[in-house]
Image 1 (spheres, rainbow, N blue to C red):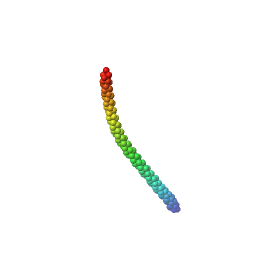
Image 2 (tube, rainbow, N blue to C red):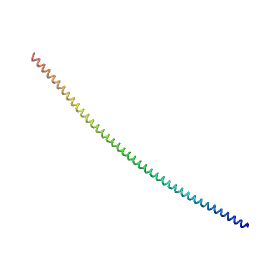
Image 3 (spheres, rainbow, N blue to C red):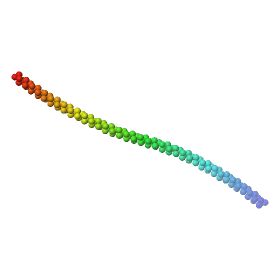
Image 4 (cartoon, rainbow, N blue to C red):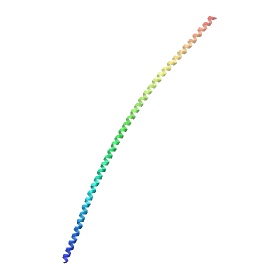
Length: 140
């Protein structure tokens, strides 16, 4: 009887151990499934994040290229404006110098014409005085 009771108790204990082992196995399987689900979720979130980052990088790269193009265009435009300004300034300076030369020539010609006119006026005055003197001597 004791051996049977001990055997029955051992069988009962074995059933409890098996039941606990089954529960533990189920928990391990559930934990493994949860871990697998979490790993898939992490992989999905990581892939989405990488895609977002790649799109952002591409967007920034395109904007940087656009800004570099605008900067290059602005620098080229500034260089053209500067060159045009320098050429315009050189042309304007040359025109001013030509104008000054022409004015100097005209001034010299006007001064010469004035000197010639004064010389003719002096000669005419002198001739007139001589004629008046000669006419006065004739009357006398």
